[in-house]
Image 1 (tube, chains in turn green, blue):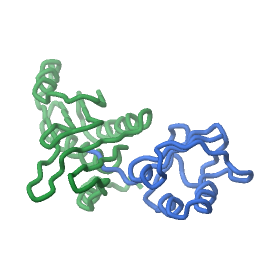
Image 2 (cartoon, rainbow over the protein chains, first blue to last red):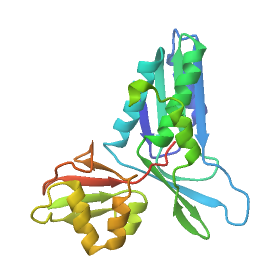
Image 3 (tube, chains in turn orange, blue):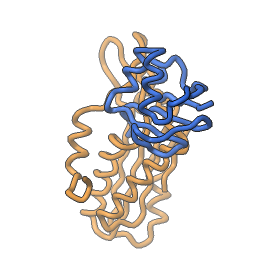
Image 4 (cartoon, each protein chain N blue to C red):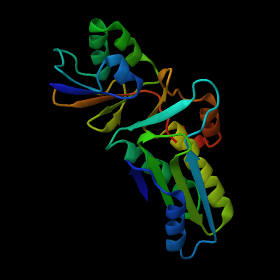
Length: 153
Length: 83
């Protein structure tokens, strides 16, 4: 299941619901990504998360399909905020269930790497000193490259 | 008239997130559209020409040489930063 949320979500409640619905899995991995808090003279006050309705959902669905091709997993939940967020607010939740734990760890790791590099979202940081669009991090692309296989190219 | 969508930093550079735009005669692929925009707005043209920019035509991801027509919705997508 993929959900794009305009309003804050409660990771605990979502995870409880996921676990409750999951009847037969031996393993569940959950990941919560949050807006990082910053120290210093001019910290981020607000994050604006933009998406492309009609296209972003498809880009996430593609990531889920990719994960399902690679690993033997059961249920997947991907929740992603859009709109205005504050430091320490959850941005993204990924839950994966499977019969065996190795598949859940790898699939969740993969989904996050691909959400960072393939999903159509754009973040803008708002500080007292001004605004800037977040540029992709080289580390995110290096992480995503770990999953590249001859089949991909 | 085509509808152009500018996401992320491209919206700031374009001065608007959406723009109605009549495709000039002969402009029938995205590449040519970027050239036409560049003639009017060098900065925006340069930003749209960056290799990392991706495109969608009527909500389907498209390549730089994808055909376009008036009545299409053409989106310009800069490098992403989600997750």
